[in-house]
Every structure is written in structure tokens, then in C-alpha cells.
Image (cartoon, rainbow, N blue to C red; front, side, top):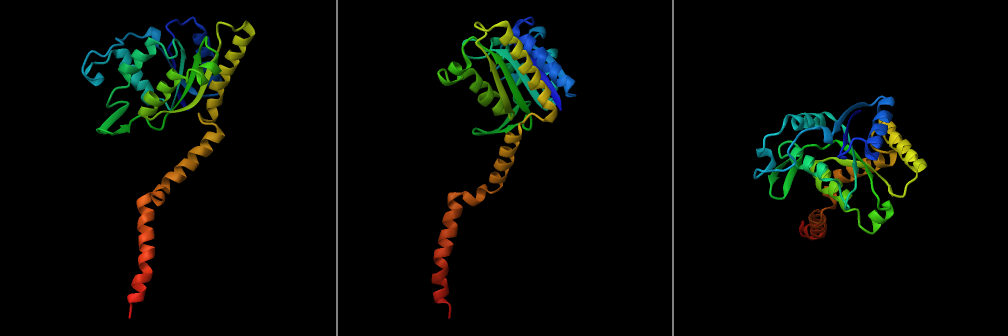
Amino acid sequence: MRCLLILAHPRRDSLCGALFDACADGARQAGVECRELILSEIRFDPDVHEVSPEQQPLEPDLVRAQRDIHWAEHLVFVYPTWWGTFPALLKGFLDRVMTPGFAFRHVAPDKWDKLLAGRTADLITTMDTPPLIYRFVYRAPGRRALVRATLGYCGLRTARIEAFGSVVASSAAQRSRWLDQSRAIGSRLIHGALSPAQRRRQRLFAWLAALRLQFYPMTWIAYTVGALAAPARANRCP
């Protein structure tokens, strides 16, 4: 597997940075081919100044980032959750790098091609809010935006989400366990990004998609009309 790890914390020497290193170590020890992208160390304007982002020339670091994303089969995003969502550094990076023609292509007002389809992603995030509160009370706004409105829009399927918190109330022993968990997330990639249960669901959905025409209402109506008309036609035969 080819894996691109993206660290989206503004500080390299942070808990996110340590989780990032642990995940990368686990993946490499398992034999996964890895590249790293540390957003705080690349140079780019996070703002889109043109009418559409593809009209704004990409800085050399963003050109390399697009090449790395295209190269990767799996992406791992490591970032802190601030104010319920991901940092401005990651938002600006996505605004600039996920451009039309690279990440997606509109073919009609309500239809588009997902140009990054076939890839998967993991999310590793830290937060001071207890993860259950974030998920069930706040409804996980940042996670949903990243998974559905950004990665999903471009065709990436999120395979795993790991939220570590509450950081502010954590002990050294708890943070050490988080590092072990992050290392295990990287190690598991040698067997593929999806769990056995996810692979079974994927095969099931593919099978259902192949049969979807059989379940269209108009198809059933046509079959019913044909069946009802058959006896009438038979009665008219000499």
C-alpha cells in the first residue's frame, strides 16, 4: 500500500505531531510505503483569490502535494479539533489543493465526477471535548464536513476515525496508550485500509448496485402491466 500521512497541526512538537510519528512508524514497520506532508513546513497562500481555485496558480509545494495525493492509495490526516472543527491550516490547504480538474469535475449542475475515487482515508484527531460529547451532543460538525463534504465529494472513502480526548484532562499514561493506538492504526495498513466487516459491506453494496435496476418503481410497474395484459391477449387469440 502507498500511504500519504498529513500532519495538520500548526506546531510540529505537539501531541498531534507525536501521534503522526507513531502512526508513520507503525506503517513503515509493517512494510507500508509512506510519504509525509507536514503542512506547517510548506509554503502556500491558504486563501483563494480568484473566482475559482483552479484559476489560481499553485505554489511548488502544492504541486508536490497534489502529486503525493495522486500517488497515494490511502491518506491519513492527523489534526486537532478546535472549536468543533479542523484548524484553519487544514482548511486553507484543502481549499487550495482540492481543485476542480484534480479532485473532482463538474459534468452538470447536479452531477460531478469524483476524480479521487478508489482511495481511502483515516482521520486521527485530538480534542479537549470528551469524544462522546463531541459526537452525540455537538453532532461532530468538523468530522462530518471533512468526511462527507470534502473527502467524500472527491471520492475518498473514510475507513477509520480515531478521536483522542479529552486531552486537557489526560494523564501521561493515557497519552502513552494513545500513541500505541496510533501506531497500531499504521500497522494495520499492511492488511488494507478497510476492516473485514467493511470489505464485506463493500461487496454487498456492489452486489445491490448491480441489481438496482430490478428495484426501480417504473420497472415493477412495467412488469405488472405486462403481466395483467397477458391474459387479455391470450383470450383474444383464435
